[in-house]
Image 1 (cartoon, rainbow, N blue to C red):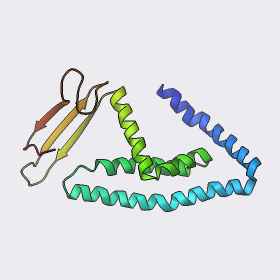
Image 2 (tube, rainbow, N blue to C red):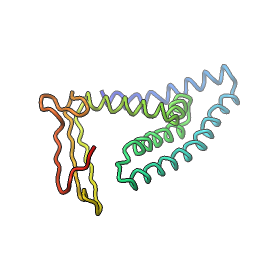
Image 3 (cartoon, helix red, strand yellow):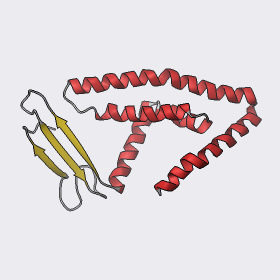
Image 4 (cartoon, one colour):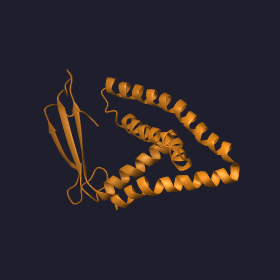
Length: 171
């Protein structure tokens, strides 16, 4: 399944983009079509760095307050994907890249992706906390098995969690 998706992404998508650009060129003309591609690239070049800096500030603020910067890191991941799509010439990739620049769209895609990960496979999250406070050197590992919902493992109650090193802080 994943190899077919990669096939579509890297082989079929350029043909779709080319066909769409030819169609738009026939319908709108050469220069308006080129203009659309250039304008989307300029919008991305203007908005992407601003959102990237804002995301870096949010990461710094979260870390300074002792919170894991999960949401800003996920935003940064999707901003990088948006940038790659905006750098790729084409109408479909530009549309996807521009959509990922919209924070609610980005969060909806992230929620969908994480839900799919929870449904289709297992993953482990490691969090580490260091510092001088009462919960210094705290580590926590949470593993979610395939088919479980967030916060549970099938038949075993809550996810497995290994605590060590420090006092558990309230969650």
